Image: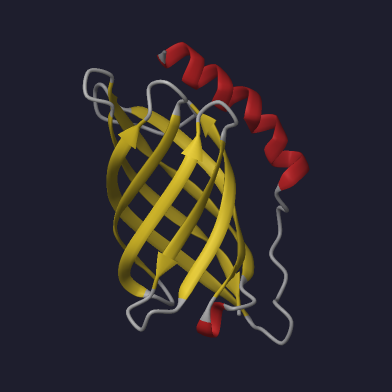
Length: 160
């Protein structure tokens, strides 16, 4: 199953160039700002469909500490995310995953990953959010229990 997951992610990496912009542009009336985030999230992988979901508290510029949910598919190599700020405003986005990136060091048993995220809007002050993030981190899947854990760091820009 690990080879299937990695193969699907690597194949989808080529789509990053076609789907995700590489530069951020200011949202209508917005200002482009630096953006960083980090966190650890846990969840599960559905062994029948290879769909996955992780949740957890993350810390980032512009939203502080808030719950984050990411839902994706190893078959498609894509995912969507929602970050909720302390005041309830949300940031939404999407990405295509690339497994086994070069130069990403992980603990024994964990697999490196990276992706290019694109903000697609949100609510409140993030209603017209746009921009991109480079994400890198490590993932651990327990194939016995289907438990899924990721640790990540992110940097990029957001406009709102």
